Image (cartoon, rainbow, N blue to C red; front, side, top):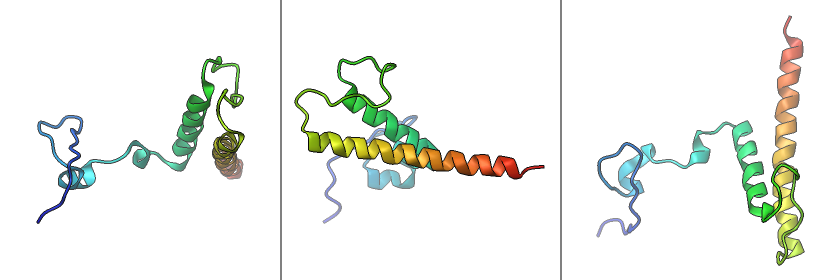
Length: 103
């Protein structure tokens, strides 16, 4: 009966529309091309963009809770942000340790 797929994607540089199944491994998500450090930076940026609202982005590292958002939801976003920041700190620590080992 075939694959029931109504979603069609138009990949950059492509000359025709096709399903993700037809594109195979050449159609990917943006995060699949990032290394762990890039994914952590991207996560921080996405969380900040979600929470920023009308605030000045340069003024806040992690913006305050937007009006109307539940505290439980804000705590989840804050945990995501903190986890990404911890990952960045760990990777920076590893990079620094590698640099200090060099003669």
